Length: 209
Image (tube, rainbow, N blue to C red; front, side, top):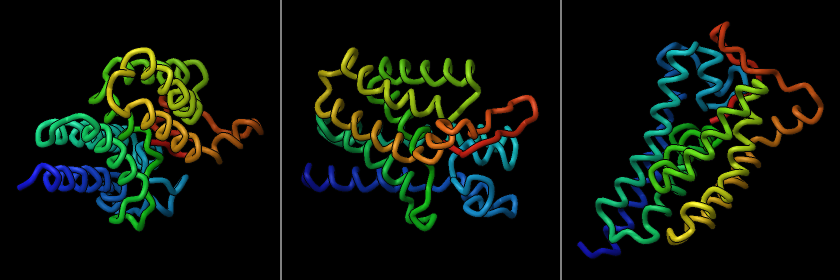
C-alpha cells in the first residue's frame, strides 16, 4: 500500500476513534440518553453530573485516550510530519461531530487535551495546569476549559512551535473549544453559570469535554 493510501486510512481511523461516543454509550448503559438530560452534552462533565463521579471520570479518561491513540497511530503508521497533527485535529472533530451520536458529541476539551499531550506534552501540561488552577479557584469547569483553550496556542508557541502545523491546529482547536462554550460564556458574563460541586458527587452547569 502506498504511503498516501496509508496516511488516508490513518486519518480516517483518527476520525473514527474520535467519533466513539463514550458519553452516549455510558448513558445508554444506565438507561439514559444524555442528549436529552442536563446540558444535553455528551462530554464528561454532563456524565459526571448525571451519573456520578465514576462514570464521569471513566468517560473523561476514554475521551482523552481517543486523542492520544489517534496521535500514536499516526506516528506508528505514517512518515510523521503533519500526519500526527492532522490526526489529532480529526479526532477532536470526530468527538464533536460523531456520526454515531447524530453529530452531537462533546465540546472537544478532553479529546483535544489528550491529543495535545500526545503531540506536545509540555504545551498540553501548561493548558492542563491552567484548567486545573482555574477550576480550583473558581469552581467553573467551563471557565477552566475556555482559559485552557486560550492558553494553548501560546503554550505551543513557547514549547513546540517547531512541530509542523501544530501552532495552526492549536489556534483552530482553541477557537473551536471557545465557540462550543459560547452559551457557558454568556452565562458567565451574566453571573448565572453554576459552579462545580465535587463533594456532592455532581456537577452543576453546562457540560464540557
